[in-house]
Length: 87
Image (cartoon, rainbow, N blue to C red; front, side, top):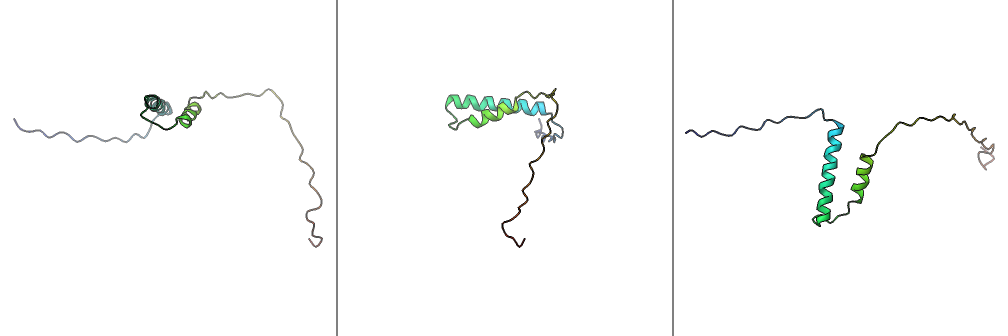
C-alpha cells in the first residue's frame, strides 16, 4: 500500500465576523479564566476582567428625553484682560 501524505490545511481569513460571535468568545474566555482562578491555577486578580465583561454585557438602550432643552447664557467676561497697563 503506498504511503499517502497528509493534505496541507487550507487557511482561510475571516473578513466578516459578527460582534455577537466576538462577544460570545470573550464571555467563554472569561468563564474559563474565572474557573482557573477559582482552582488556584491563575493567581492574578480578575477584577479588571470582571469590569470589562460587565461593560461588554451591559444592555444599551436608546434614551428619549421628554424635557425641553435648557439654554444657559455664558457668564459675562471680565473687561480687565491683564494687570499690565501697556497691553
